Image 1 (cartoon, rainbow, N blue to C red):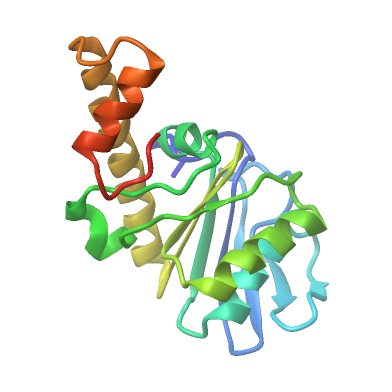
Image 2 (cartoon, rainbow, N blue to C red):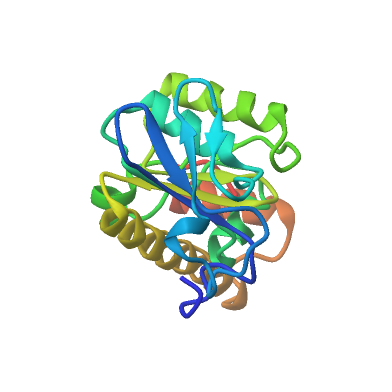
Length: 201
């Protein structure tokens, strides 16, 4: 993840379910290149209590909510990857091109903004998870959350989410650079015509 630029420094966090009742998560503030297995922190899925030598990530509740919501989820990644973070700054759901639907779903919901690690962020995520079971989730003005049945699937989706977001951004930039839209009203009409079933950016 570091090599591919999907996380930076100590930003972002990762977890994996180890039983029906608990999961391991990366510790808060430690350099990922220096983390050892003994640095990981074990948390209860049901009450959030933890044990280990370090403090767990401040965003541990985000992970816990996903494990509570779906017993088939066994890995959760929270990233600050560039392209997904750009789209998350819009504060709107992302509708990837059809080619990505099998791995990302038809919609990648965007959770309303709340301070990192706050109770409000947890509440906002819970609102979305009551309605749907997303494979990936954008956090407004923050980053993304990706889940999978295992680490490999979560990593694959993380990469694909970045590719899908990059493709979307490039497509919009191309439309503007080709002079097909010149002002706000023309942009609105252009996107309504080109993507009639999608929300207007």
